[in-house]
Length: 140
Image 1 (cartoon, rainbow, N blue to C red):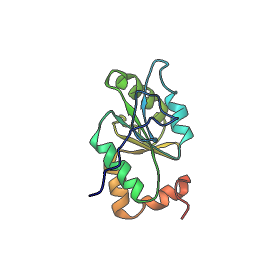
Image 2 (cartoon, rainbow, N blue to C red):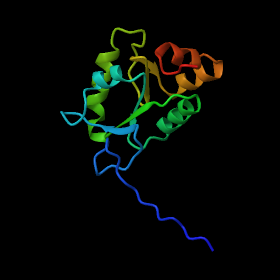
Image 3 (cartoon, rainbow, N blue to C red):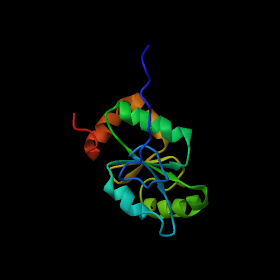
């Protein structure tokens, strides 16, 4: 009979010791705890901002992973949600998306692309790959 190999969950060097999530998933804090939202959006080709534990962000992430994109996923705590949504609203003000920002919010190429519905609709129409290529998230 074969013996099972013991599984040990080790924290990754880029994540603090209290979190054992995947490398591309971090918790976004407010009031000096985390990075500035504008910096996070501008540093990543594709980023998903979502509530902590949101199943819709998981769907968006899995769709983008199947296309070959490794999106950064930042989870927002409930107590920080209002402040971060206000900050996202000021970032997106003046663009063609004058509506209120809802979570999960997908930013592609530093601009608000939309939520799960926009990502899915663009994927079904076949335009999502060209949008990701233009943003530099896909090379093929």
